[in-house]
Length: 71
Image (cartoon, rainbow, N blue to C red; front, side, top):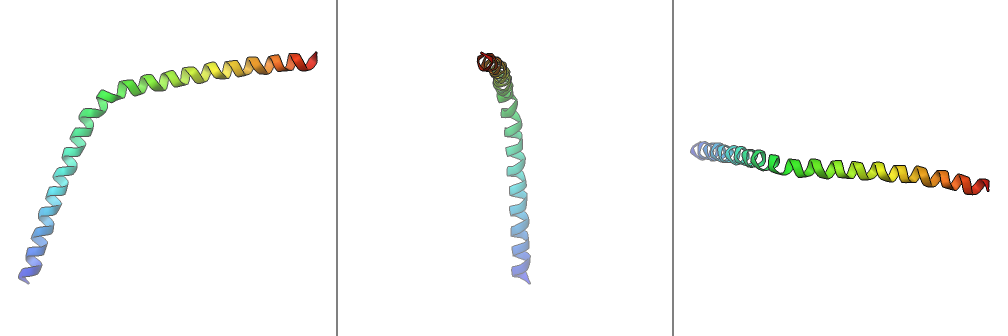
C-alpha cells in the first residue's frame, strides 16, 4: 500500500511539473508569436498580390492566344 501511495504522489508531482512546463511554453509562445505575426501578415499580403498579378497576366495571355488562333 505504501508503494502505491508513493507512486501516486510521484505521478501527481510529475503532473504538476508538466502542467507548469506547459504553462511556461504557452507564455513563451504568446510572447514570441506577436513579434513574428507582422512579418507573416506582410508575406501573406505580398503572396496574394503576386497571385493576383499572375492571374491577370494569365488572362492577358489567354486573350492573346485567342487573337492568334483567330488569325
